[in-house]
Length: 230
Image (cartoon, helix red, strand yellow):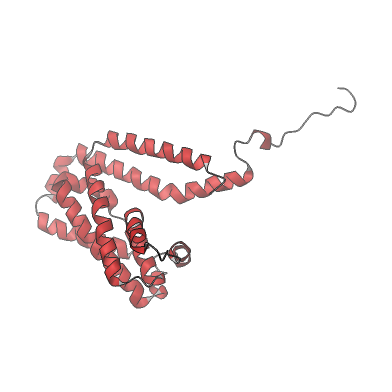
């Protein structure tokens, strides 16, 4: 080896696909959206099981549909109040027993009643109670500054894309949204998304998997292209 020429040492950063800061951003994104991925996975698994063992679920859940419906609605209310539980993965199973329409109707009743209870608890007992169920500081940062203009449309949008429990507690704690506006936006926001979920629960599991895979791929591409803005 010639004198004065030293072999170059690589730290590994030269070959890194992401910089250190970008890696932290990507880790944050994965952590943020991991619950959604897991929920979708459970939904697809429930669809597969309900379609593969439909006779079993009909024997177990189809004998007394009235009692089953009441238990399901009460279960949804408990899941919302005791956040972050969710009843969404059960939808495909219930669709195989009750059909799309009645599963959607019962889910709507449960989610509306559960959201009312959560909103009332937040208004009545405040942070001392809600902090037992969720990170109050985290939801405060997200929902404390609501726009004054077009508030109704904004709440309607939030109700369609935000978990029922989180939004109900947040609006009860950190806003002065009236009961009237809260109820109207809850009903109008819950109904369409519930029918969409019930209909998805009736589709073949393979179709759901492909649909979810395409959605994940498009989402990953969008997040990658906009990683510096996130």
